[in-house]
Amino acid sequence: MGTLKMRFLGAFELYEDDQPLPELPTRKVKSLFAYLVMRRDRAHPREELAELLWGELGPESARNNLRYALSALRRVLGEHLTIERGWVRFSSTRYALDVEAFERLIERGRRAEGEARLEAFRRAVELYDGGFLPGFYDDWVLEEQARLEALYVEALDALAQSPKAELLRSPPLRLSEEAGLKRELARAHYARREPEAAYALARQALQLYERAHDPVGRAKSHLLLGVIHRYLGQSDRAKRHYHKALELSRRAQDRRTEWQTLNNLGWLAWNDRHSPEAIEHYGRAFRLCRALDDRWGEAIVLNNWGIALLDLEAFREAEARFGEAGRRIQTLDDVDLFIENRSYRARAQLGLGRRGEALGSTRQALELVAAGRGSALRYKVEFNAYCVLRALGRGHEAQAHLRRAHRDVMDRLTRIQDPRLRESALQGNRPFREICEAAREL
Image 1 (cartoon, rainbow, N blue to C red):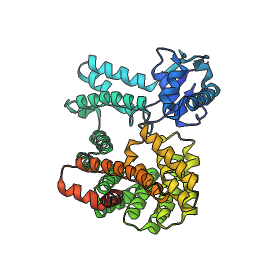
Image 2 (image 1 turned 180 degrees about the vertical axis):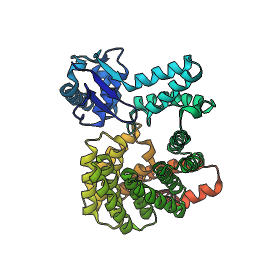
Image 3 (image 1 turned 90 degrees about the vertical axis):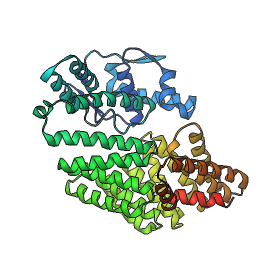
Image 4 (image 1 turned 30 degrees about the vertical axis):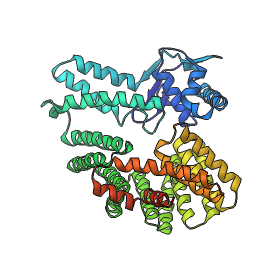
């Protein structure tokens, strides 16, 4: 058995004796392994693991998914795991884990004084490198992300408050670290539907990135500011930020930010009912994702492409795009993206006269939302259900879903403190406006 080296901060990477191990097949398999490592102090019953990672799928499907995941782990990491009939455990004693090293540095910084304290915190900040398992959204991961981010902030605060920190880090690096923290906080506020707080922090992040002469950070901040303006229905401001993000990401050859910006420009064109323009943006974004072998990006762009095609009543082509997205989603274990795909695909199926399939897709998306998944998508799923059920002649049932969609939109709008911003979000955000207009007709 070789020494297993595991990187969970900033990425998911596995090495044995400094040689990279084969890629694990899905994000859920990676999440399962990371969970076993992070909870390595005990054995875990299979039922507990199945419920933790696949509970929303029902007991039988959850058990089947766990069996598949354990089979994949056994092929790559069998020597480091103990897999029994009733339980599973990470049992290796020959390993190095970056999270463990990060926590040791934080503890060392707490105990030390003077330059030794600053050096420990500086090394911890460098090791953190973007946070715990970025791009993973399982509940247990989110809890670990919050815990480790609190330690990261503690280290940053200690460095920022010490005049000797200037001796240990160059000003551009210090500014970029502070900017990165503010941008992550802005994203967190946006995810909690608090766009005004998100905007203030994103502006601060942009200013810090500008002072640090960091073009990639500037591009990402402009992209985030565009997303916030888009949510608030301010299309012109969103477009200006997106074009700046596009310019900077291309100059820095940051292809990931470039495709994300093109994808958001597509959404903005769709929001303004310029679907042919949206499709052009999605085509460019998709080609970049293909070049990067970014299957998650491909799935997102294909899904949005299908939504734009619905506007043009190109139902057969829309169904093809949703189908391509769905095949990629199956390898990603991204439940939220799966829900959105099923919800919009139902409208393409309805347009093709496949009424039974449309109803099945709608029911599937609704069941997952009712089970507490995809809460950020509730208004979309409920409104799509309204559109499908109304077309199927289920008027009373359709109206119930429209009311739920309307309640979700109003809850989002009431979180916006400024009345003028609240009104612009209602008038300029197409899904919000369409839902409210339909609700007024009830």
